[in-house]
Image 1: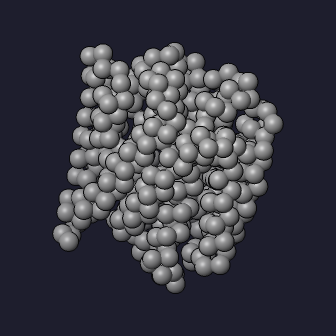
Image 2: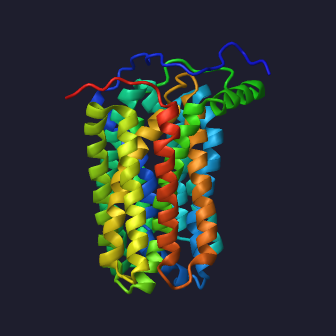
Image 3: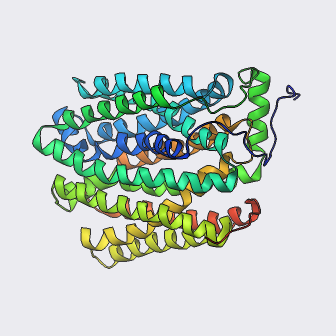
Length: 418
């Protein structure tokens, strides 16, 4: 298939400078990327309560999460080309405005069906926000610098995630589950105001052909035909798969099976966010000293160790938070390395189509999340095993990808000690 001359190919061209102060860029990226854990982590302590309050089965409660993620992933396939055609800023503003409206609707939902509909709308809007954030990284940075910038932004995400679960637990304890969902509105409005007032357009040259069918098909084929894209996208998908298994199952396992309180559960999620935060900090040090490939390989060892130790603890009959949570910290440290490296690596070869590459990468992650949510809806059986086995499976798959595909297809980079 022939495509217009503006079609992309794997490139390492440096981005054209855009007048965005470095501190502002990292702050905005952190807030935009954080909308995903804010949307999930803050309401997880309320998930069992809202399921009971709306007289719905567990599978329907899981659908409030899996439907959101499916909409999040699918919508990026549309938002990506739109941002390449019209720019990041109008897509961001539209997405944040839509998200604010949907957050209010979800908090006021009178039934589970209405709540699922508003959560799906939130997922569509969230797709615009996160996709643009990843594309902005490619607009402003070269691939290796993008991984470092992404790790800084994800450090900010880690700080936000540390607050979300405890806050969600406290809001649910003090008020009810609707208060936890309503808190999302304030976050979206604040981020919308910052982007509207301070963040300029980062896309140097819009692609007027980005929405043409021939261009869409040609661009997608070019991206999907690039081995480096697959290596890094599979890395991020497997890493997110393990995290999502934990997020979707842990509220039922920890609260209903292991019998801890919502506040204690919020603190447990806080501790995993701290481990993730440490991973993003470690990522920057490793990238500077070891380079991209060795950094990902080290993270693969952390991931596999966490999953296998959790499986071992469960096999030995140690079914308690004290036994099952610490191994997951190792997984989360690895996750804090895999995500900045993987997300930057997936879009790095495509400076002229970062929106489409980001969308395809995000779609893969959320498709995995939806499938996991559907599986867990029927697999949660009043034991710890669905949680433990799911995390162990993803951890081994993640390590295999980090040690094989990434080592084979990652670009050659020179590490500079700092």
